[in-house]
Image 1 (tube, helix red, strand yellow):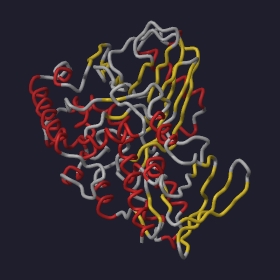
Image 2: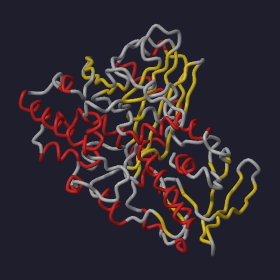
Image 3: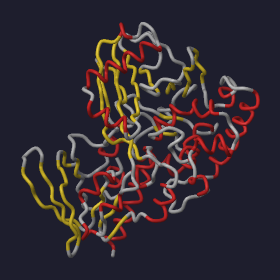
Length: 431
């Protein structure tokens, strides 16, 4: 995703964008079912919290105000009952917790909301409050804040979906950063019908030339005055060489490690600290009558999937889509995912949804399944400290740019990385 923002900020230069797939944007995928658009991957972004972000969206021709999600933006389904607006003060008070635990959780939410107003780590070269990265979110909640394990378990679906692993595996720093946006009364969620694919479309419309699709980079080598790329044209099935003054390699490090030979300055061992989770998105399409109060609806105590979005949000439509998000934490679930055939996986997701919401199975006419083998970098304890202090974002004229370079699996991280990479490229070309 970060290659599109980088190209946008370099659109006054001669830029060539190579895409291995037949579309741009990675997991920012649009879906469609009988005229109903839905997000088949990255679904929403946070409402711009600064004039700079707001201007960027508007310069692209987007209207974030029109994309604002109506309240409640989220809800939790727990033991047969809905808790609307589950991250607000009022929603938190409805959680099935004892008075002491609830009081501690409300105080934590207040503190995080206050910190969110003054702390923006995206794009920062240092790790603010680095001590939070020493332990897991579970350890922070239970040992530092004294919250019971039931609170940790209620956050488990959120952590799995947004951070790629459970509270016991993700860094407290990463977990708290994400929860800040949820607890903040000033943060709003914005979403287009087809999800963040709308952002990618706007970026492409503003480029002087369209990307070259189905161009697979198979090697990157330094040249005396730039960088040489070995590219396979998948459509023509022919290889060719491309030379550039600078290259922004906007791919996950699990791919970059296979492209960068030692003469570029990187070795495979440099990328070993990066860990990834896998993802499945299932679009359950049909005469869906299910009503859910939130835009994003979380499901507690369900192992098959963590959350879902209904589109259109309200019932009464002939056709609706229930977009189900099913994170696959590493390593066991990824291995299972690769072995399981799509019909079996789709059947398991549909059975779980019908178990929670009886009668749903009979309303589903089609299931569209999307499998992302590598979707999210997992910010485990200590990873972000290492990333900020020891991992070089560029060497020579090769710039590594991806959301995993921020250590946070969100679209805002990819956008920030694209902006940073464009600035680095300009400096290299100027020199």
